[in-house]
Amino acid sequence: MSNAMQEQPGTPPSAYRIDKSRHIVLAHGGGGQLTDELIAHTLLPRLGNESLGELLDSSIVPGSAGRVALTIDSYVVRPLSFPGGDIGRLAVSGTVNDLAVCGAEPMGLALSLILAEGLERKVLESVIDSVRATADEAGVKVITGDTKVVGRGQADGVYITTAGVGSVNGKTRLHPDQIRPGDVVIVSGSIADHGLAVMLAREMPEVQSVLWSDVAPLNRMIARLLEKVNGVVFMRDPTRGGLACVVADIATRTGLHVVLEELRILVRPETQHAADMLGLDPLEVANEGKVVVVTRPEAAEAAIAALKEDAHGQDARIIGRIEPERDGLCELHTVIGGRRILQKPYGEQLPRIC
Image 1 (cartoon, one colour):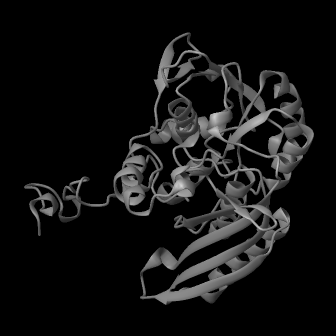
Image 2: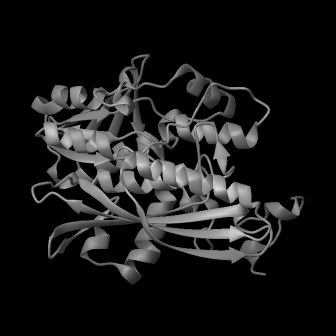
């Protein structure tokens, strides 16, 4: 065993230190700075190309019948079922939403299952029923798949990978390079519900809470928004790393100054209570049923109205703006009148929430 992996004196056997420059740690999967480092230094140098280098939720490529979007994601959430959803609903929603925020209409999904020996068949049946129900809700079909079984105790019962393909309207281009000073930042509802609901279910199952995950397919809401509103320039679903990760990434990729108003960001009381108990920042906690939208200023109110027509967008609101300073920073104006720079989380506050 290398020095980097040796146990330190006085620490439990499971608490050995790992050299992050030489070994993969859980935080590399958190969607924050360590994920960026892993992608930039290990994956892109070996796999990089024009499409992959965009690092968007879906890659858009030209096809004989127009532009096509492709996305893929894996789901390893624990527990498999949580208030408001389960791994099946999460897998379908996450993939559908990754297509939708790039302006694509989902055409079909591929479903890959890794099952652990000993998994109760009724658990699997419940997960697949949830996959079907969520796919029906989104108006998309599972059109191909694969199943593997691993040894008892592996994969925490079920791991799911879903890939999705969608068609993109020829006029649609949603990309950070479209963002300009004066643009408005909108979020479709409350934040942090999913990550904290999963965390409470896993770490404090004895706690009775009204907190539910927001996990949901948003493609119908997003399609209506794009159909009704001219001036939408960029969208992203704030999953791993939460809202802070998305807005910090916007600032970095555009080189512009992003300002958010904390007073305008909705955190439900039960969500804030859970965050306080766990010592977590809701701005950095994952969402699975929300979308961040950037629009031209003259389109903002129409965008809010279009989002509010959908049940998943009832609490849509303007939370910030893009300013002309070219410092690549995101600034939060706090409720007490202070200012705070928002950055991507370094690692992961909540492991295994998606």
